[in-house]
Length: 122
Length: 221
Image (cartoon, rainbow over all chains, first blue to last red; front, side):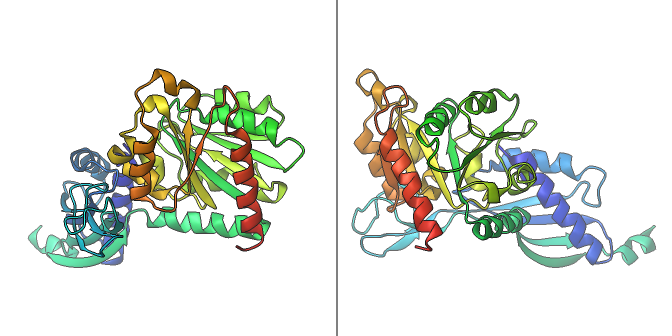
């Protein structure tokens, strides 16, 4: 439900990073999105497109890598992906576990046009 | 085209603001509770009862987040506690900077206990660290026992879950044991209290929990 706020923060980070690297356009941004995060990817993609307008990320593609939930069982220590946070452990049947992966909401890499190349093409 | 590694948590600016808030609360010795729930679970009513119960015992302040209106702040303010309203203007949660701005009005040094009533929403508020000492939540029995499994994050993040409106248990299909089992599967250390603001059941246990946590934090335990 807070995808607009998240999209705005992503665009802020893109603009700042592009500025530090010479001010080119951002073409692709890659995001890790954990399954336990309260962010809907489709809504985020739409909010992102809008938030990019009139910035150096206008038209930027957002590549979202959805990271499955990975739990460590508190009964037997089994580590593995689970369909949900209160699913039984496949090893011992204990419910739930400690979250090893699933809370990610992290920008990983982005592709930048180098400003010099843009000028040459123009 | 150049690929640039960035590796940044999208909410890192919020986390930095939250850390600054937390340092300020620690310096002031103020216990800050971020109270969360879905809309209509009974946060405001509980805080009205809490204001009455703690009158003269601790210096209590309340910061209320809502999308619109001052209604909740006005209700709580009638019970003689300082209240500050934060309107998020459409935002579905409070974030750390909104709380920082509220502290210009509600100086932590003036309070022993500061309760932040978050926007009524079972999803988003859990995602944003405010710098609070603890998070607590209300799950009211009218909402259904399936909520921990369906909306896990808030249950995962909270130190205390209040089962609210328990006076209505005879009239609704709600299995408290199942709800608590699912919530503790997410968060084994979760404390649970049964409470009804209507009958007063559990109110003493709630204020005792609050005062005990305040003492533990103050004494560095």
